[in-house]
Image (cartoon, rainbow, N blue to C red; front, side, top):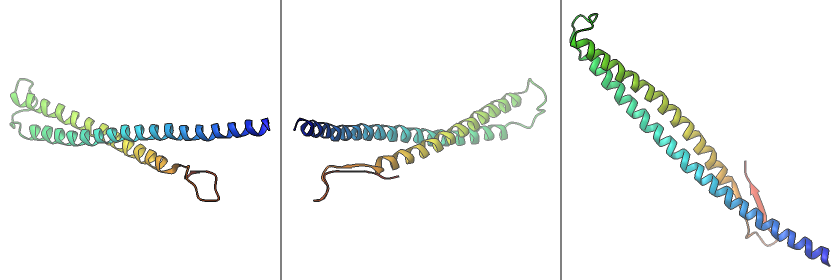
Length: 136
């Protein structure tokens, strides 16, 4: 009788631990989904900002007076250098933004699938005692 009671208590504790583990896992997945959503949003913003900066830099270069560009004292040289720096910063922003956008979107989709696949049915049908389902 003691063995049966002991096994029953261990079984109840195991079921409760599965439920707590699922709640912890669910909270972890929700936290990661939020984090990667923010990462994706930052990537989109960085990409758009990079496109704008690149366009501004090209516009500054195109708007420079057509003086002799080989001399270092002209005002056109300063304007061309400013345009080149702004364009380079814009291109770097585009590269970083696309990377963040892609990684954030991919990881968000991955953890969304994992969150949707995790379920513990504590209210099963008539013939089941409990069920644990993991879809992959």
